[in-house]
Structures are given as structure tokens and as C-alpha cells.
Image (tube, rainbow, N blue to C red; front, side, top):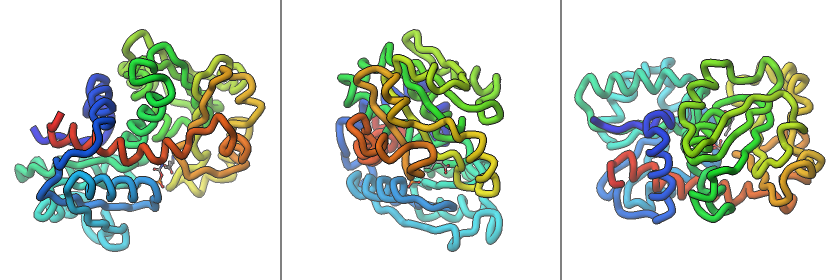
Amino acid sequence: MTRHFLDLSDCGPEGIALIVRSATKGPGAILHGQSVAMVFEKPSVRTRNSTEMAVVHLGGYPVMITDAEVGIDTRESSEDIARTLACFHQTIAARVRDHTSFHRMVTALEGQGSATNVINLLSDYSHPCQAIADMLTLADEFGGIEGLQGKHMVYVGDANNVARSLAQASLALGCSITICSPVGFQFDDPAVDAIGSFARFGAKIYRSDDPVASAQDADALYTDVWTSMGQEQEARIRREALANYSITEELIAVASDGVIVLHCLPAHRGEEITDAALEGPHSRVWQQAKHRETAMYGIFAWLKEAI
Ligand code: CP
Ligand code: NVA
């Protein structure tokens, strides 16, 4: 069966650990002679650059394709785009507005017996590549992957695509997580149950709407934008609802002494995080950004069954 990396459920909790361990070994020539179509329906700095450079360092050839060129489901259907790209490329890595585009691409590829793999570079549902980079950042901080066991991550903000993948990965490596969001912006019960099924080593998932109570004893504080790409029409209502769900110096002060501050970036300083928190001594956001490329080494190794 051809592997795809659409969500962390594709590799499961044990696969997450394998990918993180493999990523730290650095790049091998596993993409030698292969090309990767990189399709972006939405803007990107980190994902585009880290993926493109990872492909080069893994011996492959990346081809960048913008939304204007392909027009997913406007110029051409998701299915036809996938089948066309599979004529030339051994991997399709895409950032899409609607996660169901991935399922349609994979179904179309399977229908013609294609061995081309598909990677999710962010959808409205999840951001699995980001979560692997986040785990690498935590492993650096806490003395390796085993060091995550028994730790507590607190995510403050919108329960979104990044939060879902972060929670799945954290729980899989034994790090408990509290998702702290206002009512109306939280994961629902089925989502919490599904995310909770990733938990290993006694880790637990909690939901809260109280940032200060949640942050007590936190080993890591994480946030993301209040308004994700594609939600721009809700920006005003989100700014009001999420106004108290920010990482500030005051919130850092109630967490553990050695707490680290994470953000997938781009950051909206003065909204979900203050300038002082982002630039302060607890911040690890640049190490996190750098690990976006390290993460891709592990993800490609798993995808190509090289681990
Ligand atoms: N964190 C992240 O995915 O950043 P970009 O949107 O710049 O790729
Ligand atoms: N939640 C954000 C993440 C950006 C990297 C978004 O989807 O826009």
C-alpha cells in the first residue's frame, strides 16, 4: 500500500515516535531520482522553504506550483490535478483550503494504481508536518524524545488545525496537553476522544477555558493565530472572543520556571502572543522554525518506507 501523510493518524502514535527519531539522523539520499510537486493553495514561508530544501538535501527535485497555476476545483478538479501531477512526480505535497481535497486526490491516485505519495502541508483540519517539528523542539529541550513523558503542554487559543496535530503528537510521546480556548472555539467531544486515542505513557488531554489555571506548572506554552487562513471573514468576532487567550509575560510567570514558549508562526504580535513573550528568554520559536526542515527528513523517510 502506498503511504500518505495526510494526518498523524496515517502513521499513528508509534509512527510519530519513529518519524521523530528518524528525523534527528539527518538526510539520506532517499529521494534520489525522484521529484516532488509542491502545491500551495495558501501562502507559506516556513513550509515552502523547509520542504523545498529538505527535498534537495534528500537528493530529490522540488517543483513549486502556486494556486494561480493549478486552481484546485476552479480550473481543474482535485482528482484531475493529482492524476496529472502523478505522471511526473513521485510525491505530491500540498497545502489546501479544504482537507477533503486530499481524500479525493488519494482516491483518484489509488483508482489508477499510482504509487505517488501525498503529504499534507497544512489544511483546514490539521498540520502534521508542523507537529513533528514541534516534537523535535521539545526533544531538544527535555533531553530527547523520552524526556517528553510526564511533561505538560498548554495550548492557549483557537482549537484549530495546528492544535489538533500538536495534541496528537504530544500525547503520542507521553506529554499531556491542555487545550485552553473560549467556549465556541474548543474541540468538541468526538474530537477530544479521537485526539485522546493517541495518548501513550499515561498522557492525558484536558480542555479548559481558563488560561491562568491551565498554565500552572506548564512545561511548554503554545499558541497560534486566532484567525487562520480562510477564516478572514470571522476576524472581528474571533478577536473579541479570543482576546484573553494570549501568551503574555504574566502567563509565563505562572508556569514552571523552565517553561518554553512555542508558536508555529506567523505570529500576530499583540494578539495571541506579546512581543515580549515571543522575543523573551523562554521563546524557542526560531529553533521550532528550523526544525521544520529536520521534520521533513523523518516524514519522507516514513513515507518512502525507509525507516
Ligand atoms: N508554520 C507554518 O506552517 O508557516 P508557513 O505558513 O509560513 O508555512
Ligand atoms: N492555523 C494557521 C496556521 C498557519 C501556519 C492557519 O491555518 O492559517
